[in-house]
Picture: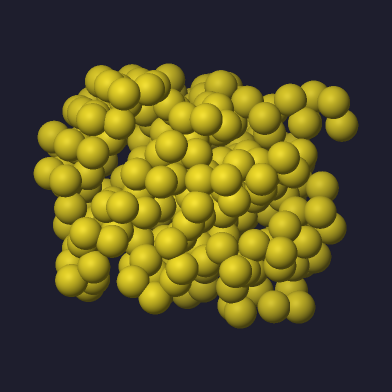
Amino acid sequence: MSDDKTPPQITDSHCHLDFPDFEGQLDGIITRATEAGVTRMVTICTRLRNEPAVRAIAEAHEPVFYAAGTHPMSAAEEPMAQVDDLLALADHPKFVGIGETGLDYHYTSDSAERQQQSLRIHIEAAQRSGLPLIIHARAADEDMARILAEEHANAPYACVMHCFSSGAELARVALELGFYLSMSGIAAFPKSRELRDIFAAAPVERILVETDAPYLAPPPHRGKRNEPAYTAHTARVGAELFGLDYADFAARTQANFDRLFAKAAAYRAAA
């Protein structure tokens, strides 16, 4: 574990910097992230009508990249995404992923059919753009595994299971398809032993880290507003899970992010 003034670099692969929780505070948020070693952040647009505001954040802050899609919990109340519209967004140099999209039957099972339609549209955009798909999955493991596998058989695509907190079977299917699992603060919660076991059984080459800020702050900040700097707390838990020192785990997750989010890695290399 390093206490150097220059901590190992890591990436917050999923946060929501456009949410009201951060209004007027982004300069400080990003400074604290950088000081903690979090040198890149992917901020996620969950409603396509908000894309201009999310894009503006990425354009204004060098360490920030972005992705956009229709969150499954909003699928019933938002216009259906169109493949061509998502592909047009992908032309932006800092637009690096499709989503988040997925299935959430915990609160919104009544819109399951529309969620599935939206998911398949986002998958097609990932297939055609070559950008990774960003998946939200909750209480929908069976349908999630089936649709991801069906569409991958039609045409391959890359994918991250963001904030993975589903069961071992969905993790198995995702890993067999070549997808990545992202650790959020949930994996650091004391009662998440079963989830940590799922991560520990996965290849370290398929692990990313994230905050999902402003949600799901890891200990010692649990119950407070999350922010990208706290990715480091989750990453330290990940290092322990894989029996690696923090610098090694950080380097591996960086390599994983660069492999999956190749557009962000290329942008960084050219900067």
